[in-house]
Amino acid sequence: MADEPGRRAFKGLAPKGYRIRVMEPGEAPELLAIERAANALLVAAGRSELAGEPPPLGAFVERILAHDVFVAENKASGAPAGFALGRDLGDLYWLAELSVHPAHGRRGLGTALLAAVRARAEWFFHRALGLSTYAEVPFNAPFYEARGFVRVLRKDLPPFLLERLLSETPTGALPEDRTVMVRWL
Image 1 (cartoon, helix red, strand yellow):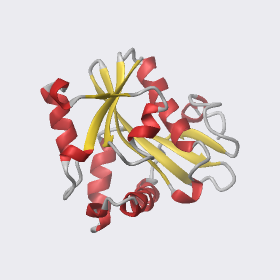
Image 2 (cartoon, helix red, strand yellow):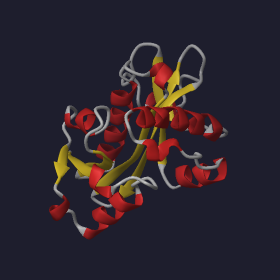
Image 3 (cartoon, helix red, strand yellow):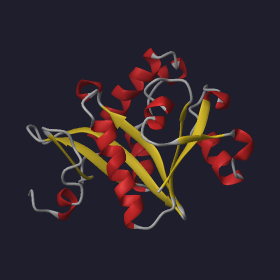
């Protein structure tokens, strides 16, 4: 199992005790549970609009099928501990989501998943990596800024990125609380 291509591709990116790999069949329920647990951190950070009912499994599966899925796996248990969703948008590779289960937080998994997404973007010669996130939540925009991303002013967003920002703004959240960020590759 350790020699499978999905496991070799990201060798050395994860912190001790973890590995980064691509999603395997049947993992959607575990990834949805991670998303729900990670969203609880946003609720605790004052983003109460996320406190509502999480999406059903079918809607989650539909979303992940439209993306490349990177998984941080706990080596001891083999269970997913976090994941990232990425998507090709031409010259831009888009990070649609990065979620780490709070039980595995503050160990470098978010940084490792981001490194895997960046590696994927570089393999296919994308010029930049982009995302939308909360501007003032400490584990959102400041996390990405510390890893080389810069905020794009709203007035400078091309229409397709403004549309993406609005589509990724959770129901009940204010678009003004969110920002688009880019890292040139």
